[in-house]
Length: 354
Image 1 (tube, rainbow, N blue to C red):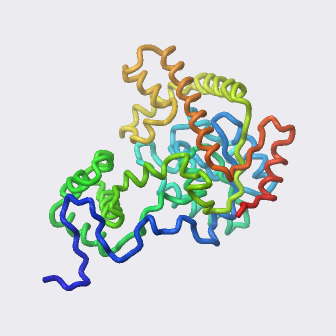
Image 2: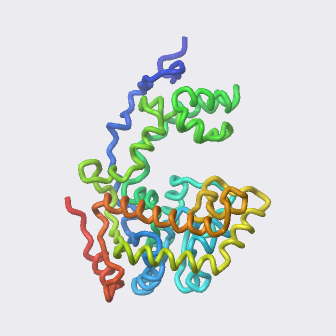
């Protein structure tokens, strides 16, 4: 008989949460603690091709700021043209962060990005400068404002027991166990990705719900609606707006410029790297379509370019949907005759209605 204080796993499969005596996820507060370095930052977001980067350079110069990329693809080295990455001259003009920090065969997730963003934010503040998050990846914007999905905190005793079990019987055993209670997450994770497998099992045991269910609930625009979640971080956040026809015209012009700049050759170089591209890198807008063309899954180049145009417009619509469901975003028109000053005024006068 084990002592009462020893943590024991319930048998699998089960739909009941293990009662550890700790608060379940539903009981955990959504809001984050104060004195958050992110709350000393500014945010400039907007749909693709809305002019965020150019405005950000002007803003950073006027307030002594440094730019942190709010983007899931500019993190990758070698993916320059299709991500509209700032040029070397622009990066000399104003320091940019979280750009070119991963090789394109490395994986990426939002938790890693948030951890790196916090570190960079603290470093910028320590230099007496102002962090400015610039980009349009909706999920990254959301974790800045609301934090990661409201999962339970780490339970070290449970993690140790799962780790020991993996050491004795192999990670594949835990992966098979996860497949019984959360097949969606198990299908996404490699059997050797022990850290994430343990976290998924931990969430299931502590909440009685699969981590995929929590993430699906959280990863929707409606989560940010006023009746669903309070504003957790008080960050002045401006979203750029412009008429839909103007936005689509800008998208067309940007794609034409990228193609003329050698986007196809860039993707060829990426495909010929010694390691295959990561799942995340392969899904990058435009890169996926060009890879499909190079690997024979699209019939011709004209069709490929048209697919890129369609998918980019669809992505812009997806961004706009997210932005509409985050009510604390302050709209500023790109067509404003002095948009830079207007953004600065909105940042400086920012407040969150209680």
